[in-house]
Structure formats: C-alpha cells, structure tokens
Image (cartoon, rainbow, N blue to C red; front, side, top):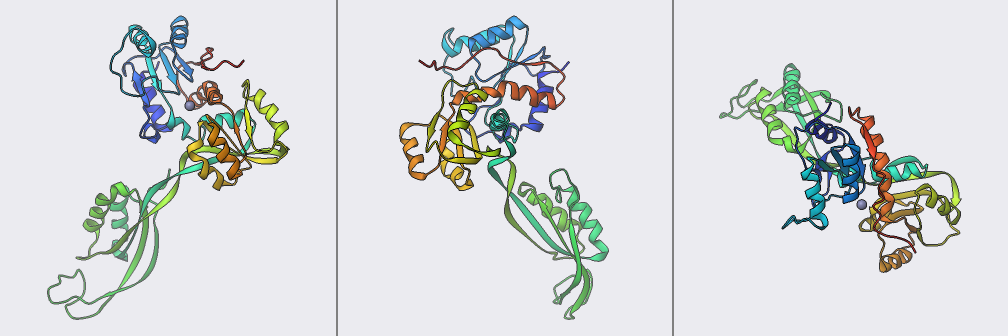
Length: 363
Ligand SMILES: [Zn+2]
C-alpha cells in the first residue's frame, strides 16, 4: 500500500514540482495526503468521463497532465469544470497534475513522443541553465583536511550524486603582518612564506553564507584568502527533446508514418515535403515560444502543436521546417507516465485512461 504523501515524495524526487514553470499549477490539486491509494489512472485531461471511468474501476487517484484547476476559481457550481471538481470531492478522489515539471524531464512528454517515433540519441533540446558558485581558497597544508570537512558539512563540493568533490594543488603563500595584526604564524613587519594548498570546489549559490561561515570558522588565519565567483551550467532538465532518425528520410514520406505512430488524424507541414531530414526537435503541446531557441539547435525539422497561421508564415520566413502534430499528440503521456512511474518502483497499479479527451473532431 502507498499513501498520496508517499507518492508525492517519490514523484518530487524524480520529477520535481519546482521544475514547473512559475505560471503553472502542479502537484496534488484535490485530495488527502494521508489517503491510501487504491490504483492510479493516468490521463492527458481530467474530464467528467475520466473521473467516471476511475469510479467504475474503483481507482481513487488520477494523474493528469493538464491541470484541472489552473486560474483562480470563484465558485464551484455543479456545471462545467465545477462539476468535475465536485464529483472528485464527493467520492474522496485524489487528483494530481504533472504538467511542465513532466515536460522538463528528460523522459517527459516530448521524450515519450520521440519514443513513439522510434527516434534515437535523445537529449534535451533547450536545456535549462542553473547558477553555480565556485570557491577558491588558500590554506596551510596542516589545516586543509579540517577546512575540507567543514566545507563539505556546509554543503560545498556536491556535484550531482558525488559529495566531497575538491581539487587541490600545493604552492607557497606569502604575507607581511603589520603592527595591528594578530597572525596565526609570523611576526609584525616580517615577510612570512608558508606552504599552502590552493583548494577549489563548487557549491549551490543558495548556500553561500553558510559555506563562507564554515570557511572562516575552520581556517586558522585571521584573514583567510578566498574568492567566490558565479557561473552557469546546463541543467539536466529543460524543454523539448532533440533526437535522430536511424536513417535520413524524405520528410513527406516520413510524415505518413508519424501520423500512424502517433495515432493522430491529421498533421500539417510548414516547409518543403522533398527535404531530407535526420535530426528532429520535439516540444510536446505548444512550443512556438521556443521557435528561435529551436532554430539555434540546428535540427532539420521541428515538431510541435498549436501553430497559428501567422506563426506558420514566420516559420517559412525563418526557414525552419516544422510540423504541427496537434497538441493532442501529448496523449502518449498516458502510457509514458505509467512506464515512468513503474520504473520508479511504485507500489500500486497504474492504468492509462481509455477516454479520448481530444476536444477536436476532424471532418
Ligand atoms: Zn499540453
């Protein structure tokens, strides 16, 4: 058995909620953290039919991609979205939304689409950047281990799954104390030369004050010499997926396969159908805000949804061959999320909803 709280902790470790965009609304939207999960139903959208499906199957937890509760709610009447919320609450159901935090994951929705298209060599298309800080300091050899231990304790020297990451090199430091100084070693007015270690490590800039405190406390000198500078690194989270076809193909013929592999009723090409392509950039849902970033990646073709008429002209002008695969192509996340949760060792059964929530009907 597993509680909602345990599930949320497992999710937050792998698909962190704080990786969601600031405008988004992810996490437990409706429910009780202490509730025991019977089974989980995954869906792209939480409609009344999806809730009814969960009720019939006896599942008390639904994980949706698009948040049912998004902008502020002024009343919950028994109609429209309010009726869905009421039905969930009436039956003690739990509703979890994993939206842009799932998009940002390297096995997220865009990767799930890339998997369906059997694309290889998948990497994040537009990686997030995150700030890091680097500390460089000088300490007499006698105290280097003491300083390292204190810095490690304060959270410095942590790189991914590795702790105690330091680099050090030996050298000579020199200083001349004046008459007001209280030097650890040496005398006023006399040049002192000491065997020192130059020590380097990185740390999360949010830990800056505790790292500096640890350094000052553990260092024997009255005035420890150190400097800190900020830099940016690529995060393992980001937007979209860059991937490759196993062999170059003519885009026109490939799109027929795309349609059947994604099980969509139509798609729209913006660009020439004769072009030979190999690299593909995918942003599930609506990815046009990333148009210039995608162009810089140099992919042969860009797959996304919700492209407007004038945006299509912009794409033609920019020479970025693009395919509108419909927002609903994200529906592959129903099975994709089931597989991702199962790979995390989840203790309950996960089933993908059989309800089609595509609001469009093709005529
Ligand atoms: Zn979407």
